[in-house]
Amino acid sequence: MSYEKISTKVLSAIFATGVLSFCGVAGETAMNITFPILMKEFSVTTSTVQWVTTIYLLVVACVVPLSAYLKRSFKMKSIFLVANLLSVLGVLIDFIAPNFGFVVLGRLVQGMGVGFALPLMFNIILERVPSRKIGLMMGVGTLITAVAPAIGPTVGGLLTAHFGWRSIFLVQFPILLASLIAGLRSIEQKSEVKRESFDILSLFAIIFLFLGLILGLHGMADHAFLSFSVLGWLVLGILGLILLVWRSMKLENPIINLAILKNPRLTGHIAAFFTLQLGSLGMSFILPNYVQLVNHSNTTLAALMILPGAIIGAGFAPFSGIILDKMGARKPILIGASLIVLAQLLFTLFGLSLSNTLILVFYMIFMTGLGVAFGNIMTNGQKQLPLDQRADANAIFNTLQQFAGAVGTTLASLIVALSQTNHKIDFAQATAQGSQNGFRVLLVLAVFQLIVLVSVVKKND
Image (cartoon, rainbow, N blue to C red):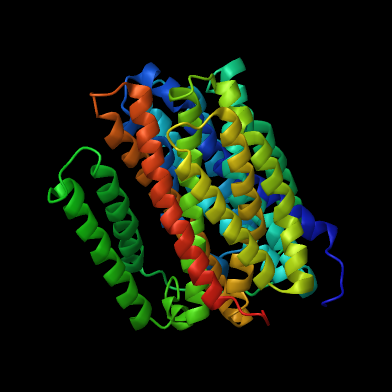
């Protein structure tokens, strides 16, 4: 098995689920660059407009934990079909949206589709790809989750500048159709399907957990910490976490097996992965807005500033998987994490006077590190477990990845928005100050993930 080639059908199945996920993830950050336009068109504030991204990530974070249960209980092709149709419906709603509420609704529906599709892609890789090629294909898979957020602003900026923001959703229709055809023809069922009972309390716990934490963070922009809009929601999120852990320990077949987190090396990989994704989505929010609001550039130029870094990240993601397959995990992971720390340090030092050229160069360094480390952290983390537990690990990685994206976007927008309320300086200067504060927070997180990775990634991995 380990020396077999990857069959055409398996590649087609990975393509189908990958493209489906790509549309959602890239569309998520493509909308970031349209925020100034949406704020003007629909008369909403910075803290309100970021719900376009936050609601998508929140829904994905609530759906992904169900993936291990869905894999055991339903055929992969059925899961894929539902995911694709939900994505199409979400794109349609956004394309025809008459007001801001419908824009958010469309992102919610598409988020459900991506929540089904994203872990399905990785489950197909882990189940169908020969062991000696898993690093390579996991690298390809993480192109979607690591690089699509960076490509999104570029595509979104170019489309918005020439055809309007609704074209971001129009171009997804033929792509989703190609994904549907490829998936229905190539996705095969290899693992046994046995319908399990569904624990509704666990589902409510997941919803309370992510809804409470995200709304609590979101409320900090406009409310006092001790108010229900902040502390009340955060308490609900914590209660949801307690309930989810209790149900996971009590049930013989929990929706998601949290007992695997007793493995300290797996937990370390997950913590670093979470932190890395939080920083990535935070940067995807800060940089396009900096280019437009501080440097007074148009959306096209804002998009082009991100493009070189996105291309570099895309190139390194599968290449780093090959390095992992041949040389082990420690070198690519620690090199990538170190480059991310360097990039965040540079952004922090020059945060008040970032020219477009500096943004381009620093972001290239950041995306090089992300491309080298991101997929390998997920791959090596799952290698700490036996094969029968990897679907649960996959669910945890993908869930926390989406939650980290929601936290990163919310945190970045909150920090920038707080500075923008300073009316003693002009709006551009206030935005630059808020961006630098955001860079400082992301630098601390980058240093944290590097320290964690040094301790959990061993030479013999």
